[in-house]
Image 1 (cartoon, one colour):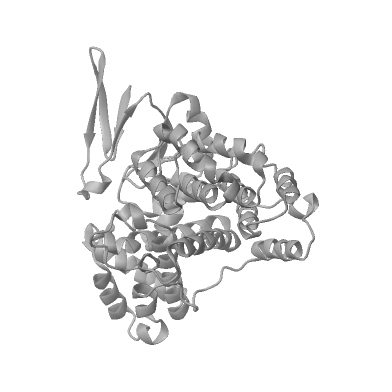
Image 2 (cartoon, rainbow, N blue to C red):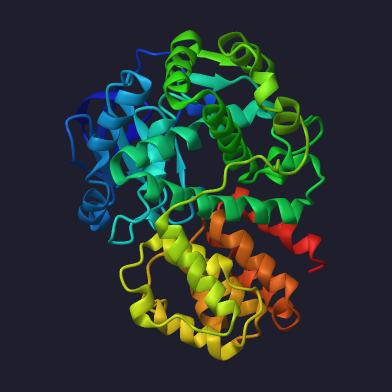
Length: 433
């Protein structure tokens, strides 16, 4: 057994039957970034400033999956300034971890669901790395200002991916997450408070309103500002924002005052009131656009017209293109189409839980009852809420599967994190189950 934490591990000593780990943390951090893990962990360095902690059985696969992390750090520094935390190590947590990642400085926590064997989900690593500037250096003051952490970080993540993979790939990611955000807004109600970036959360459990809204709407707001003032000018704003507020916490009002001071007249170009304080998604948001997206949208339009995509039509598609297609087909389709898409995309062998979740949601709504065993297999093997919540919601919303929702939850809740248990309970109760 050994220990790792959000600090520099300076030495490990053996005292009898115990390993004694010593840590130092030269920078002050807010309490939510204090993290400690103990387990049967091995470590593999994958770059001069980064490495992976994991159980020995998955260490080699994790190291391969995240081998490009040092390059991510290099590109991020070009955009946002020096990486001040010295090391960026990652820890692969057990399957019950309810999130994709947690940006603890020097030791990012990651879900094992990112290890899919094709590096198609490393955008999560780019996101957690981006927090090293937007979130860990400059931190939201209260939960009501959470969008400052996440909106800025999604924007920074996209810039890192754009620099490494190209703008078309970054636009793919934007389109995927935009669809997820619109689904969250649909569940909340487009006129509800949780679709605002800033709203009063007095008396509200933050877990009850946690969603992709602060991430994607926040990023979309910043992208509109960048579009209106130009990238060069916005790049200067980013650097000054981080330099001015590093190792500080700030409120939404602090940021908006800074924005207006640095970009005089910005209120005439962007409706800040609507973007930050009003519900819904403003019409002047930039639409994700690339030839990769055009290909997917073309196949979706053809499917609406009755033409199924052929294998040669989707050969060479990136994982995000498949995800957009699965998110874009109607919720209810013929059951024979469910079987066809499973074969077309090789979903019966897929390790990409994003694809599986989107497919199972459609299959459940479509009454494809033979998928239930596969759904349970996924529900019993992961604890990430990104997958659990939409699957249980689909089970509750569909007549044939409602009777299975509570039964499946009771059978597997012991393997879920308490935060996930609470979130799923709310899904079931709101659905009358």
